[in-house]
Each structure stands twice: as structure tokens, then as C-alpha cells.
Length: 79
Image (cartoon, rainbow, N blue to C red; front, side, top):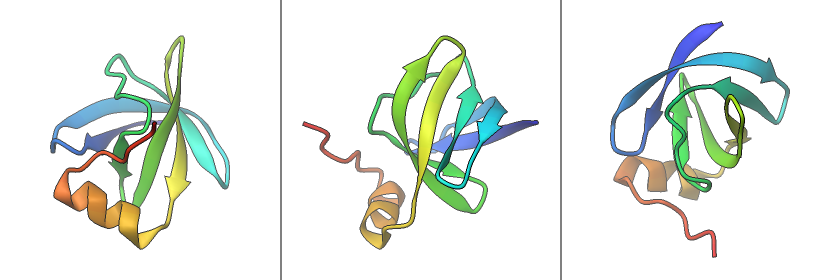
């Protein structure tokens, strides 16, 4: 299904859900946020964990600290 996600910068990006599971989803999008970037997907939050030919793979996050970091626009340290 076609939808959108919000980047930490506030930018809304159109995407298509390719696959979804209890732990995350695969999105078709020309705009590929960096691995480790937090995204808002409707009422859920996720973290980009991989890039693929058609877009990105995202895992859902529930940690209050990560959600607060998204709201402040801070990308987690992935080093």
C-alpha cells in the first residue's frame, strides 16, 4: 500500500510498503535515509537497518529514549 514516512528533519516521504512483519517492514522509496536514522510511520517509530534495491528495511522501535531522540531530531550513534 502507498503511504508516507516522516524523517527526523520533518520531511514527509512517499513510500510503498513491500512487506511487513511484527518486527519491521520493507519500504519502496527513492529517498533512502541513512542506516540508523529514525523514522515515524503513522503512530509507530522505526530505525533504518538496511538499504535494498527498491528502498529500505526498517525495524520497529518502542524504546522511549529512541522516540524522544526522534522528536529532538537526533540520529543515534551507530558506530
